Amino acid sequence: MPRTTMEDVAREAGVSRALVSLAYRNAFGVSEATRRHILEVGERLGYVHNRVAAQLATRGSSALGVFLQDLHNDLFAGLYDGIREVAEEHGRELVLAIGSRDEDRDAASLTTLQGTRVAAIVAAGLRLPDAEALTHSARTPLVAVARRIPGVDSAYSDNLVGARLATEHLLALGHRDVVFFANPPADGYRDRGRGYEAAMAGAGLRPRTVVTSYAREEVAAEAARLFDAVDPPTAVFAHNDQAALGVLDLLHARGLTPGADVSVVGYDNSSISSAPGTALTTIDLHGRDLGRAGARMAIARTSDPDAAPALEVSDPTLVVRRTTGPPPR
Image 1 (cartoon, rainbow, N blue to C red):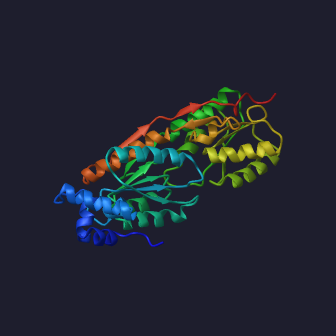
Image 2: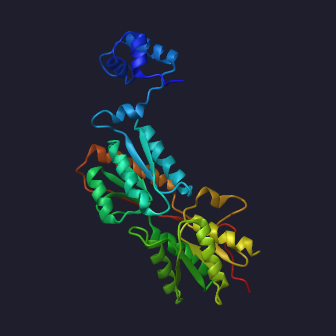
Image 3: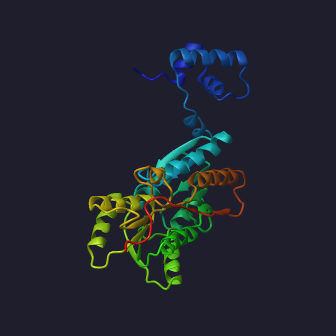
């Protein structure tokens, strides 16, 4: 069945298409009686007004773009919830684009958002190099969430502090052989490794960093190689919860008990980490709060395009669950 258009509503109501558009936007110059008549006709015909498209067709759109890195990681659901809450409070529409587990689609997703003429883009988990992100921000104001990009509005959790919390928790339990599963190296995401290395060095211990990926199954394969070596660790600190779940998958496959045979710490406090069957010890970066901060920055940027870049840094917290305990005797 063909979709009802604005032209259909105008023809049935006996008015111009422009007047229908004004009525649906509640714009000045349309009497209440005419507006009510047009809306009643539209409802009878089943017309669905696309408010986002209408806004984007207008110069000076107030809509915000949202870039989310990876929907496989439910951290980004919490970030989006925070962004959406603030956008709704301010009457802003959101236009969404998704990246991927690697950075191949990041630039294309940003370009797509820029093509919709959004007023600013809130980018959560962007992995482009700093210089490339700055180039995009020169076209459409960019707000970095969960990462700091010098020269761009940024709202992030202190990863250096979070990594130290995770590592020092394991050290306090008595672990001396702690391996860090690092994310692929990229601008803006190196502080978790630095925090881990600083904590290990402070305890007089040798850091062991293994670069893995963002894919859970690939991390499990890397964990298998690690535990097949002659000197397997007693604890693993993973760069995010998805990576930690990959380690837990491997332990389960081998009949090992997290927290008893091997301790595992994740990062992000994604919703799956608190599931009863997972109970993952992790670092909470308070994703919803970061999303809210990023949205506030984006709205402020649209009001004052020439303001100095804003920076909001929050402290993460350690959430202790069942996947950590003393090393086996």
